[in-house]
Amino acid sequence: MESLSSATQTYTPPNRRALSICSLPAVVWSGWVVDRIRPIRAGAASRVPPLALSIVTGAGVTTVVGLLGTDDTIRTTDQLVVTIHGLRELGLNAFGFTGGYHVPPVTLTGSVRRDITTVECLIGIGEVAISDHRSSQPTDAEIMRLAADAHVAGLMTNKAGVVHFHVGDGSRGLAQLRTALATAEIPARVYYPTHVNRRRGLFDEAIDLARSGCTVDVTAFPVANGEDAYSAADALEKFWECGAPAGRITVSSDAGGCLPEFDEDGRVTHFDVGAPGALIATIAELVGRGHPPEQVLPPFLWQMERTRTVRRMLLRSFGSVELWR
Image (cartoon, rainbow, N blue to C red):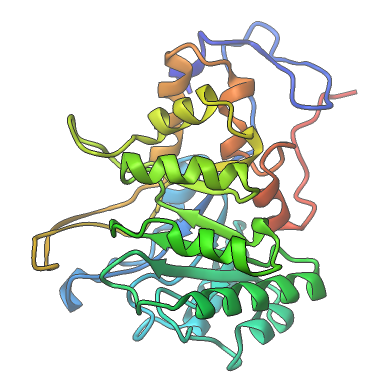
């Protein structure tokens, strides 16, 4: 946190008294939420191993939400649940989504609704792939059915009840989610797309979707100079500058997930692996650009008032940083 030390010594969370760190050049926080722990992708030899606990906690992450990616065939929901319980035994807050990239979704009990209602650690569905050549090309009706199941299960259990959508590079972008919002009675907050900064035009769509009541998630992946994408820091700045609702954006690292590049035939040419340290690097970059911590931190922290979707996802009383009395 040395890169943040010169920014401020006092931070006032919403509805809280100012938190002063005496003369120490530091900021106190209760830990990041990173909702991107998953496997994948380019053949058996490329299977990404589970993240070591030290890699997660070393990046300041205290809560993870696990999910299945492209490989929801060999990797299964029961394996995910076991992993979640293992992380909890090691002291990490851990949750998960049932399903994966494909429709019909893989489940533990035979039904996504039943998974959420009967398995305590499963809080939603995802990540369901849309606008991507690796998806199962779900229809609009299938997307609305998944959203309905997630919504009802969330109502029954007081869980998040969201569908987390992996959004690929396809030209359809967020069109299917716009169709769902215009067609079904399901609340907008159920639709939770990620990777929306992977194309600049896609991010413009995401801003409009946020104005409609959805929460959108940007990924802290590396962006090359001249690439048609926004870094997580650039995306947050654009979101703030255009006056979009501040509580409708979150940032995740895609930790443990593959970051692939494809050729024109859809074959993997190169891939990297997401790391949770990308979160703190993004925060340091934004503070270094002059943004105050009270603006920068909420998309990363579960307990802030403005991160409504993430706060709804976690549901337990984890405690928080408080002024000693």
